[in-house]
Image 1 (cartoon, rainbow over the protein chains, first blue to last red):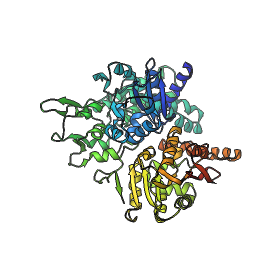
Image 2 (cartoon, each protein chain N blue to C red):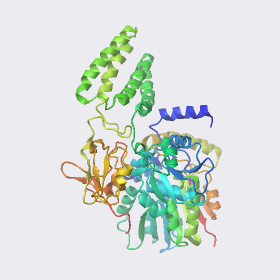
Image 3 (cartoon, helix red, strand yellow):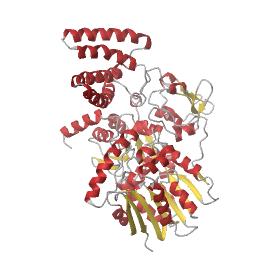
Image 4 (cartoon, each protein chain N blue to C red):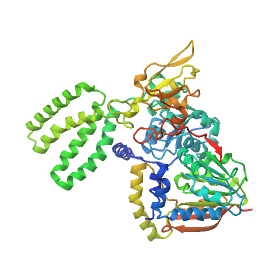
Amino acid sequence: MSRAGDVARDALQAALRLFPWPTEAGLRRVGSPGPESPVLITGNYDLTVRRLLRALRGLDAWVVVAPSSGINVWCAAAGGHLTTHQVVTALKTSGIGSHVHHRRAILPPLAATGVLGREVSRRCGWKVRFGPVYAHDLPRYLAAKAHKADDMRRVRFGLRERLEMGAAWATPTAIVLGALAALFSSSWVLPVIGLTAALAFGVFLLYDRIPGPRRAIFAGAAAAVALVLAALSGGGPAALVTAALGPVAVTALLTFDYPGSTPIEGGSHFEERRWQITLDPDRCMGIFSCWEVCPEGVYEKRENPRKVVLAHDERCIRCGACIVQCPEDALFFSDEKGARIEPQTIRRFKLTLMGQRTIDSGEAPAEASDTA
Amino acid sequence: MSSLALMRFLEAAPHRYDAGMRLITLGRVTLLHRLLAEVSVPRPGAHVLEIGCGTGAVTEQLVARGAVVTALDQNPEMLELARKRLREAPNGSLTFLESTAAEIDGLPEAGFDVVVASLCFSEMSESERAYVLKAAFQRLRPEGILAVADEVSPERPWQRVLHALLRLPQAGLAWLLAGRLTKPLRDLAEEVRAAGFEVRAEQRWLLGSLTVLQAERPG
């Protein structure tokens, strides 16, 4: 695809990021890969696949695109669209086995909520390991013979990610609300679109940066400044309303969580937050798969005895990756009253659109296979 | 309504799948399950492999006709519902496996009289379909039957246009609600032949957008 076409597609996909955009699952070649070249697995979200292929430019590698319903890796893994099954399917049906001599594949660690490495290995003989979180770290990771530096482990939510999420929410909401406004009066369209965009970008830029008690002061001050600016620039009543409401609405929206859109919890109304990640130190055998996949750096490794500790559990965002991966079932969610969500439940039942588990913690899961 | 696009939405929520399927096919899905089971069970005791059993609607019909069924699905929530539906099944007549279609390659070769697949090939990529069809061929005894029901593009141009128009809003809704998108299959019969089968019969339903296809592994 041409450079301009690529940029246009990037922009369109960034704007429509909340919606799936599937690309054909199967095998892709980067450069001139041979039988010893690395094998990388990802989901079939078009933007992800194109970014991955771009990040690998100049290298020789195989990319196996697994069918994740056109959804990005993290959301698909958490929502049950990129699980062990899709990875096994891709490894078996893409034909990669006939192109390489080895059976080692690299997965993005954000797939760890859905994909169980040892289960992939049992089902199709491939050994998977979790590489860097971001595709742009892959060349460095591969050059270092699959050694993962510490700065490749954490999910970031910097300016770029905040702007991307702002655009992803601003575009569809502005289209819908702008169209609704047009039904009433054409003069409402631009203010509504402006307000929507201000809300979307405002929320994601300020999210978690203004702690609770200061939010009211912030809202008042920002609204005053915006009003003055709007008045001085000679804006009409619509502009003044937008200026006054924008900051207030942004502040109100800052009190919510946006699971699925941010890797942080900055709001205050999140029911799931009563579940705390809990470690049973007696079960921990020092395998460190939790440390390997945690995107927030919650765990630290200890020797003598060789065990993991929950060094920064305040950072935990309840993605469940560590629980899914722990071969000793040493990790689970528990609440203050002592209720537990067991590892089997986390493995089998995925998060819904609203970030919640779809079944009660009390329900006993059945065996994976049985005869009626 | 002629489109199965909304099925993707239903699959995202297994507990409403059955009721929803009856609704969007105007009740005909029950007929479809019965027909599929009829063409799939040549005699009581036949060994049937069902790919993508979902909530077990077809499985139930197969078991009722005396088949010995191995039913697989990759969705644990769907399987849970299927187990509940079939808890009365006679002992030894039914095995559930949580597994993908591609994993049927691990089942015994020539171990089945029939392979059934209802509405699951249209969810697969082309390479996956080719792999699964080939693996299904190897699972069948000579003269074994492959019975498939799935969403296809209608054959006649006017039907294709009408189908596309009817399908578009539903597909859009399903995409928004469930994040699922599938393409109707272009030429399922050709893909089935490419895997070595001989197509014996094909019936079209719902404006030609749903096919019920029967093929045989030559003896």
